[in-house]
Amino acid sequence: MKKIAFLMIVLVFAVSFHVRAEVALNIKLNFFGPATGGKGGPGVTTSFYLKSMVQRNLQVTFAPEALLAELRKTFNEPDISLLASADLAWRQGGPPSVMQVVQIDGRDYALVLTPLPRPGAVNFKVGVVEENNKKNIKSILLDTEIVLPDGEVAMLGFRDSREHSYFIAFSVQGRQENFGKDAVRITGARKPRSIRKVKPVYPKEALEKRAEGLVILEAVIDKNGRVRDTRMIATPDPLLTIAAEEAVKQWVYEPYLVDGIAKEVLFTVTVTFALDPEQEAKKNAADPLTRLEDSQKPKIVKKVNPVYPEEALKSKIEGVVMMEAMIDERGKVRRLRVISSPSLLLNHAALDAVKQWEYEPYIVDGKAKPIVFTVTVTFSLYKD
View: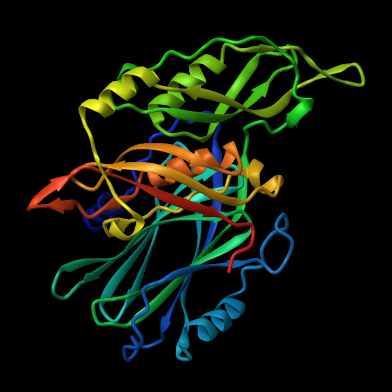
């Protein structure tokens, strides 16, 4: 038990979000590698996605034979085979992670998945820890974050301490969700007319950290036009999410009628948080920053991929979001603003991702300096 507790503490994904509606995920996991520990091999430390061979809205076929064939072809690994498989059940409100331990040649490999379900996709924190039982040495072999759209398979490769190559493949085989289960989903001009809106209270902590941007929520409206439930789709900061949900919960709409009968409906709403532009201008004048060209940008050390918004996917919206980023002396992203974008929906996803990026500190005369430069995030409906 101590061993498992240690592994969970090392790789647990701390997520700040409101649990409004219970979600349950059934996850199918396969573990591949050399049948007898292997003889080493190419330096595989990569990941990629496999789209299902069927329509996006149909259940993916998760066959070990098909996955093996793809692995052998893609990574030129003819000697790998299926070493273990597991059916993992995760439920919101329970333990944050699910784990499978595989024993090979006197070593334990703990495969830890920490999901954060979103509409149309699941964010996963993926970790692998190796423990040498003979020497009592623990090593983190994989610690990454991915976005897995519904109906697709994620495959990740890594090497252990002996330079042996292994792969994991997993897919969400079933999602049970109560949020808006019986509601009619509506979009655009079909949304009912708003009768009452309450402005959100800008959280003091968010003002102090200069957090701003758009919070996109899904809202369930009951038959009387009152907001019954909400959940976050995209946000620049969890503090703003709380304030947005508290405000939207007080909104009132005209009842939505279908053939003269009031229906419960579900649609997206947007809440804007903007800092005072005059205060921002004064702050920037008092604290000039070094502006870098593209060729001068520091090396990025952590990059988080954006979550493709469900509404943008449905509307087939794609393109490049360009932002101006302020990076502090430690290489952390402190401020962001959108310069150009094909859609507001993509803005939120891009901002949410880039705020998690990290860079090497920018050094001038032996001293780290805050800097400003442009970053771009590309959204494409077609993966290479």
